[in-house]
Image 1 (spheres, rainbow, N blue to C red):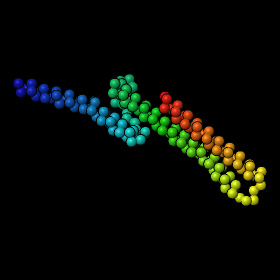
Image 2: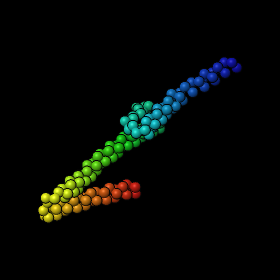
Image 3: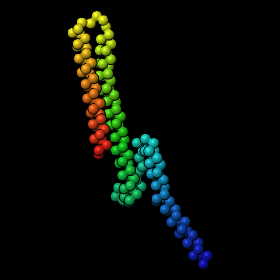
Image 4: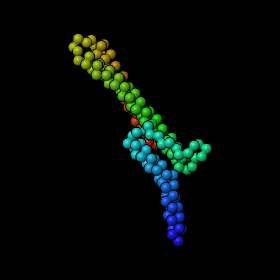
Length: 145
């Protein structure tokens, strides 16, 4: 009876060790990686447990996670570039409007110069308005999908 009790305890401990090594530790690494991604770190990579010819469902889940993180990183890069480009595109007409408005304050301007400066201000305002309208349309399209 003692012999079988020791065998049962041994098998139980071995099974527990296998479960921990095979499932609990990889899931813990995946949970840690998920927490990093939630904090904005898209450079996370979780290595699969097995080679490509011996993948199990946990490996497939890890590979899908890695692909998702890679895609999120790409999207984040695109967003950063987009914001940078839009900021630049908005600064240009604002600078034009500001500069021509300052020039209009000069008393030595002819009527033709004033008219030209006013047209340039109007063109820059239209350009800025169009840019903002396009951003709003893009936002609306993004929310629809």
